Image 1 (tube, one colour):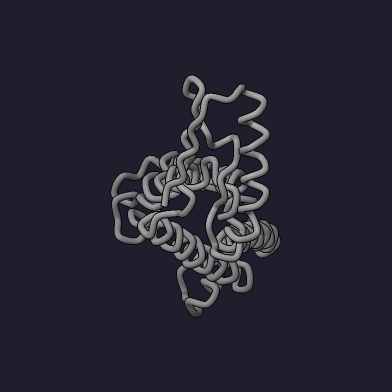
Image 2 (cartoon, rainbow, N blue to C red):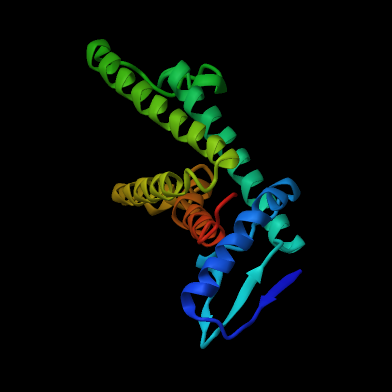
Length: 201
């Protein structure tokens, strides 16, 4: 539904009228889950105003639901991975079970590094919590989510410093690397576009 307001009144008269219209429409729009007309959304064209869409399209709402669902699932996966390492440490592979893949020759140094690893895992867990929160407060946490995605991208770049292409292209590392360098940046772009100029998402 589109509302068109046209007239030849003076600028201050039109602006006052539009403010009144937006104020009256806001309670109804909120009950219907729609965004009301506000003066900031009305481009001035000569002596006329053309209002923005009063209702979000069904397609836009569907995309928003998909975005929030993706944030929720991504956050849950990150939390699982963080707890996996944080509670299990290096030696046990976390919830993946015990494995004889490491032999400790210096217990003191290993304990220190294992403790640092648990700390990093705790930070990673908090990243997941923020992703989950972003699924319910997308507009409020917009900047936070984009910054976190930037951090994940930098983490992916740090993998490349190992200079072992066989390892980086292996099935154990490649999926994570693609997600960090490609998929998460695309998610950040989607968040930025979906929340641009939105008031309630």
